[in-house]
Length: 500
Image: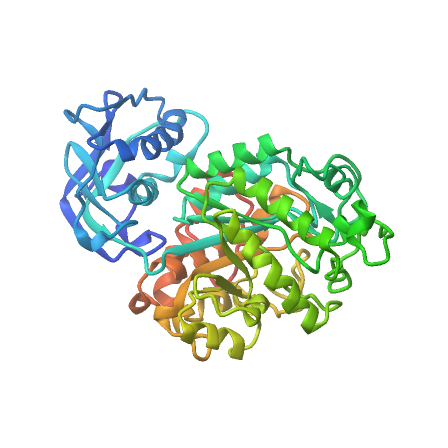
């Protein structure tokens, strides 16, 4: 096929993450036209369809009505996908008149739509009307993820980010089949979510951030619920984190009774860690934790509640165990499953809990023991996948305590064979955290997250057998035109052959 239509179609070899099976059909091209409809053969696809329409209407200028009648040209969303696709997979078939996506759940449809977006020209992502044609190369795709959990974390405690800034990041991660968004809502430098039974947590603890900027730097519960709904409408489940018993100075500055000496701590705007702790011996501490978990669980539909648990250097081992023995049942009482940084797992043998490994070594006896018992491990090794680590010594943003992580470094590890004693079957998934000690703007977020967020998405989705840097790098580089249209401030690593 020759001519402008063929040139406009996005090559199937440029998809990120890599699908399980792609069969090109060189004799077929689909073109989205002004009369096209988004057609639903299943009720589970309505939210995915609404997301797709909201993306394509501004750029195409087309009405793209969503209809329950499957007839005529357009994009068709059906159920009854091949059982091989599982709960999150999909089949995508391009015919001359239709793009047909089959899935067994809303999650599968969100993932199929993410692929369709990449099959369309990059200008489909524009917020203003663009000239066509809107062509898609002929293909049959069958796809499903390697891991059930593909996450991104944003720290809004060190520097606060507005709801609109968080939504911008949610839009960006949704394009790469990220399905969990971990929101780090409290730390020494700030408490970021309204707790109605403890109002000074935000009035005092949410009044500042790293560097000393002052203001009402927090979310109301209504704003948080709106963020949770916004994420859900993109196929993403929010996991709230309230770090404890350490990383708690913002709470200790808000309420004197949370300190063993009964005196408030001064607000903290630096970047040190490990100096704070809730008072383990006081019953009021557990009333506080109970209230926080109760209020937040009531407005969080997702299954998981993250309790932190890392870097509790000023808490003795005995007190750490005592604290977790009282806190873990509180989370369960409110119907949530505990996840936390991997240190907490040494205090329990409950195999339903999810430790998140963030270490820089390839062995951890407590995590390996948990895996042997049956716990699923979430992989976030800091020297591979922490998005706030500098790319190289000249990177102006970020830190380097876990090392310098160029794009190839972030790709060249295998989550299912990285940690001694934690095999493929024990890995729940991959999450890319972004800590914000040095991150102040959306442009900063994007520079540190892209392209490494897309790398994390690849590691979490694509089959281990496809893992090859030389084949992956051109696919990653092909994302550049799309990011430019979206206004993403990405790092143009010299390791990647960026498409113009």
